[in-house]
Image (cartoon, rainbow, N blue to C red; front, side, top):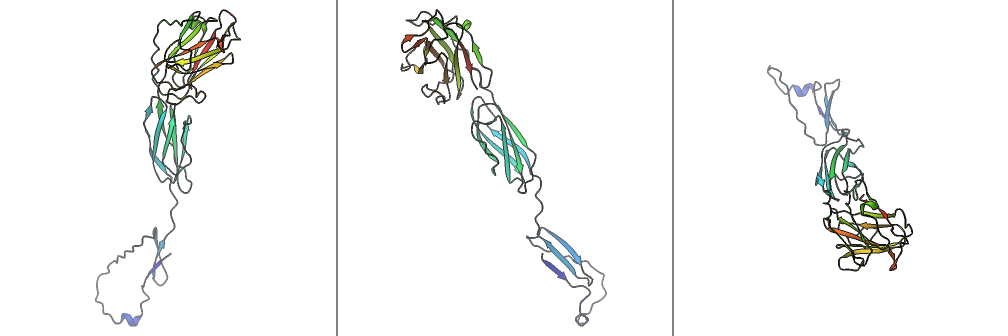
Length: 310
C-alpha cells in the first residue's frame, strides 16, 4: 500500500510567520493522483488533520463469464463432413465442450481454445460453457448443425437375365438415409431365388457415406447353402476381377454381409471392395456356389436381405 500525506493544522508557527495573508474567501483544492498499479483509492484523516490516500492493489474477484454466440461453418450438411465451431465469449479462460451425438472425429474438452474442428455424420447439437480463471462457470450456449442427406433416386428398372443360370431373381433395393430405419426385403420382393439361379440386387450408391451394408440371411428351405457374390457396375458379373467389378467374396457361411462405402475409402470391414461413386447404379450379383460348385440342395434357397445405413 502506498501513502501520500498532506500537512494540515500542524504547520510550525515560525514558518507561518514568514508569510502574510490577506483575507480571502476559502477555496477548495483539487489533487490528481495517477498510478496505474492502483485498482482503487481510499482516504483517511488522523487527529492532526493529516490526509492519507491509500493505493489499493488487490485484484477484484473475476466476474461470471458469458457467451454471445456459437457459430458453425457450414451451418448444415447433406452428408458426413467437417464443421468448424467458434464461440464468442467474454471473461472466459477455458471452455467446456459437448456434443450429442458424439462427432466422428474431433471435439477436445476442456480446452483453452474457443474453436473446434469436428466431423459429423448426423444432425448434432453442440454446447459450450465458458469458465473464468477462478473457476466460475457461465451459462452454456448451444448450436445445432443438421445433416439431411438427399435420398438417392430409385434405381432403374428393367429385365435382367444372367446366361448360364436357371433363372435370375432381381431385387430393386434402396439404401436408407444415414441413421434411418433399416430396409428389409423378403423373397416375395424378388420372386424367389432358384437353387441354381442368380440373384441380382440393383441399387444406387448414396451420397458420400463411410458405411452401409446388405446383410443376407437364410429364409425357409435350403438353409445349408453357401454363396459367392460380386459387386459391379453391371449385372450378371460374377468375377471379382472383371473390369466392371468393385470386388467380391465367396462366403463359407450360410449368412453373408456385403460391406460398402461411397466416400472414397473402402469400408473398414471390407478393404477388398472399392468405394462406390455416389449416385451411380451398382449390382450385387450372387449365386449359391462355393468353390465353383452349387451348394443349394433344394429347388430354392431364399434369403432375407436387410439394408442398413448407420
